[in-house]
Image (cartoon, rainbow, N blue to C red; front, top):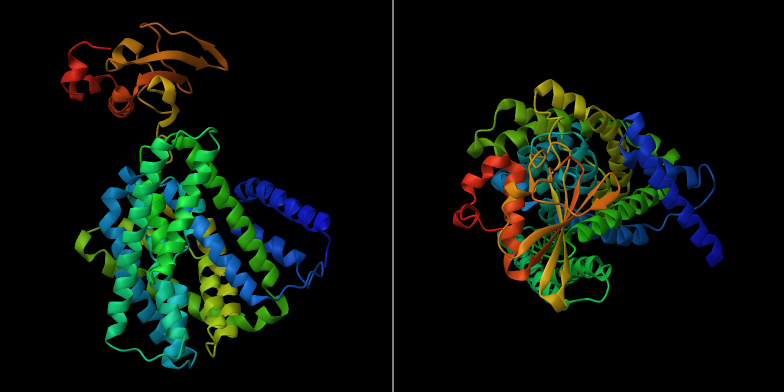
Length: 497
């Protein structure tokens, strides 16, 4: 066994290589997960000679990584952005998943001569879009927040029903009329557990007055992981619990909220790097050759029939334009999640489990090369791309508990309508004032005639009572510009601030 020094050194080198690989993958137009898988294969037995074949350990680490990835997705998702997409996102994660399982299962039974249970098991494993792939690739495409919200909600919530289906089909237990009720209970209970932990965690963090800023993101992530454990112990869906808890926390009124999101994003990247490198290390390239043909068959069925039909059926109540449906069909990205689910089937003793792991690995690589690299082009051709979409304004809160005050740190992003606004036009509520402006790396005390520019940073000192009104006012001006004064209510029109 390698010494601790060598192990830590190799791990640190792999993480650094994975971090810098993000920049390389962006330049080459390749999804970063392919680079990570390539690093794992390079380290493996066929190249550098590191032997790793522990399926149980890979499954366990895969579960842990999925928990962190879902937590990152929930903590960094804006509820205001995904709320208009809630119905369609849930429809894709439930009805769309059922259609995909059915189409892939029937096709593979007929084309690959799998028995019905094995065919539907393969369909279930392949039906889940991947949160890591969606969160890392989609946010660089530049589609509308509504479309992005649909895909993020789908990828964050469809793991829960799919993993229950995979475990059910991989076992030898009979499927009865009680099975749908059991799945329904686990999903509902998981959502409730997640919401309770998210609300309780937000309440506790607002009142904790922790001595160090870095403890807030650590505590927020711990609440999400605790929600997963509680969900699993309650025989509910732990994956849904962690995503819901993170979604509630990420949109709650937390101290150092931007720091919490930044930390979660870093942990999400770490989980992706570790998971994909491990999966590449676990793969055996010589064995994958035999999986190419079944992977191509399953991939064609999935891309040509299953995904478009699942989107079409899920979109029936929502009357989506055909261009948006076409984009949703092409954006059903697969990544580590199907591989981990295939490992679950293998560990559960499914007769075709070993072959399924190899087929899914090959399929993920092929579909990522096909879909991940062409997604921006497809978005432009379908007219759903918004390359000039401005970034949302960032507001971070630092509590000043002994003074019963808060310090808001405002960053004016490129494209914000705060640009050109005089501070007197902000008309902040009584109890709030802009105390400092940082521009081009230099800070100065502003006056009422100070005019804001893009990339300015503002420090706003506000009483606890006025904080929410001050934040709402700044966001209103960011969204609607100077005319927001006419919509800001009586407090903004009475001349105070």
